[in-house]
Image (tube, rainbow, N blue to C red; front, side, top):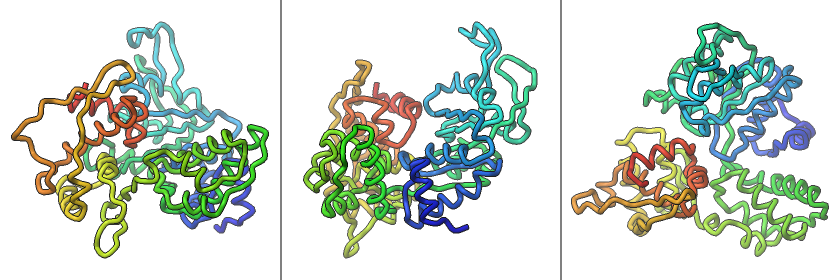
Length: 402
């Protein structure tokens, strides 16, 4: 199937799906192929790449478009409540359950349910989800009655589910069922040529919303935006452009203006790709290597600890200055009044030398750094790290940071 430019423009206008790079055209082609069917779809990609936008498009281009579209963030609902939220609960099924209530699946009957952050779903709940995918059957919490539902499932994750399966955190049979159709959305840094189209799209929308005239963007400003690594991907670019156009009343975007509105760290950070060894090099040395971004990648690294150590030794030996940068452990107030209280340093604890570096140390440092940069706001820290709030809470407790 070949997607014409006219069809690409229609997708941009109708759904906000913008891009003409081979990677985005491939994703949109798969979208157009699968949308009219009833197949389960798994949308993968880093945070901010537009997974929910694609999920909406799958629904709106299907025969179910007149039925409900229900979006559920599996990582934002506590594990103890997720099952009742998805499948419903009978009166008295748990403390505070004073009446029978519908779950999200029942609400989405004949429509589409979007399960975002599917990798955060507990194993016990995964079993019930698999049952629905296989037979459409489920039971409310606290009931043995078998109910049926007709729902199409679109799931999304920024995790490597194959790795999660190997670690025993995700059911293999569910993974195979979800992964029958996969739409992968590339990070923005891998298709910088689309930035021009995205800037135009977001700027025009912001100008129309604020009833101002958008005067365009200088080539130097466009080149500057293309050079950024955009750890927040399309979402981050959209926020920057919308803010710029709104506050500057549609004035022409210059390079100086773009530098003022871009977050301070954004022009200095380099994003580590999914495969660490793909870091761009010059004369055998890594370029723009940022150890903090390495920490962030390690939280979701799809390889075992031995491989991680091997890669780290290779990279850190070429970035001694970056690796040796001290990590300050100053108390940071949380948004609820709590503060990080680092444990008393242990003289016998492993140092940060490459040969002694371990995954737990890097993970702890990454979390501390993220909390410090966000002034203790755990929601923002979780977004910065690319993990769910629930995972961050668990890691804070594991490392005794409360």
